[in-house]
Image 1 (cartoon, rainbow, N blue to C red):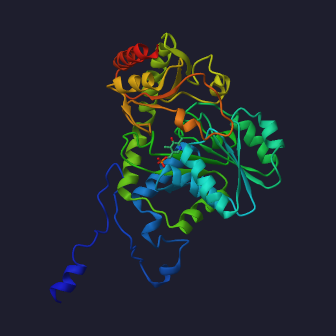
Image 2: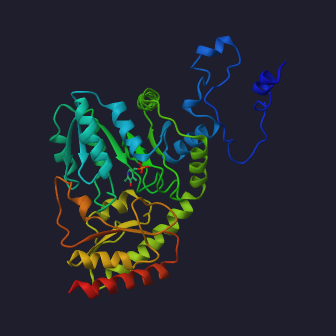
Image 3: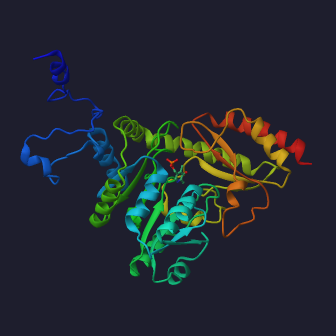
Length: 387
Ligand SMILES: *Cc1c(COP(=O)(O)O)cnc(C)c1O
């Protein structure tokens, strides 16, 4: 044979691989089938690499264990997981009720895409009592999308009760459980139909990979999610799936440490004269603390606080003085971050006046004493300009 032919057929993947602790990272679009019968036997064979190979399958299995799910679909980002879930479950003529504190890009998807495809979107105040919410739903409502705690202002919904009442009316419930990370809160065990996460945040844990997941127990919903991914042509890479699997190994340790560090910082902030209010679900005076204490096994490192009213220059001086806190969106990594939330709150239908600038902190794995010293320097800079 000529070199051309030999170079195409030499160096193919070995048959049996050495067994390592983690799955192999397979790269492949084409999957070679064992015989002609297998070519169209989708039920028994993986026939194309887009559906994911060894690392993606291992991640799906591990997430199913974490979520207590029958099946988990993977998406190229957290926002794709939410968009994909809604696209898989809704059709023209349906209505969806979306909590008003929802992650802002989800609102963008609902307003720009869902509405264009004939799905009506109604935003409900996170404080709406479950009975009022479900009783007030029109007959077109097919799904309720929750986010609890909300990722800026931490409001919670009584999600198990909403799920229970919605089920009686044949309405699906879905939750963005990125704050709970599949670990601190178990949506499926609490009766919620669809548990969605931005794995980008705590599961990845290192601020360097995008991915999302949607998990379900009902095999019909599991199938719909998987079909939805297939129809849209979404795929995640083996390298990224491997990175997520690596993150999962230390998720409980990181969450425990970051949750404890966060609570330390939250308690300290509460005693500072520049602070009007600390919004952290684990603080007993947090308005929704009872819901958190009932349903959650812990807290992550994400919470917010309200500064006493001051001009923007004082707020910016606070943020610009911080050295250990990066100024950036996203969260869930090993490092601390801070943002001011106020511009994002303006899009809400049911605005809440916090009485001062709302700052969100993500607490990382630094020593809390160092973070506290950094925040004190920032508050000093704020106080000088607050007047
Ligand atoms: C970041 C985030 C998402 C989206 O995740 P991406 O991977 O960035 O698309 C969804 N929900 C919440 C609450 C988030 O914080």
